[in-house]
Image (cartoon, rainbow, N blue to C red):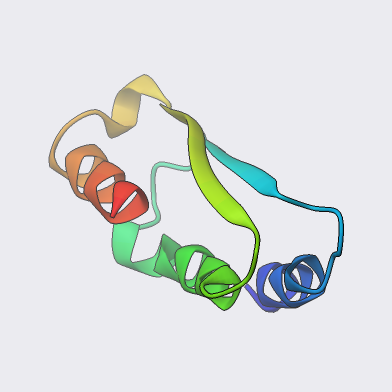
Length: 78
């Protein structure tokens, strides 16, 4: 998560970057959605910058279908 935070800090300073499309491909079935929230928190560094964050592909393994997937999609899209 520290890498995600640092990457977003750098992206927030980019002069020519206008749109950042964020996709999430997750094959890990053991992590709860709450533990993944740190990545989303890192993207909040871009709030107030000239960079527009768009949600791209959200993909999970078949084992993750269900309540956790629904919660994660809601967290990503807000």
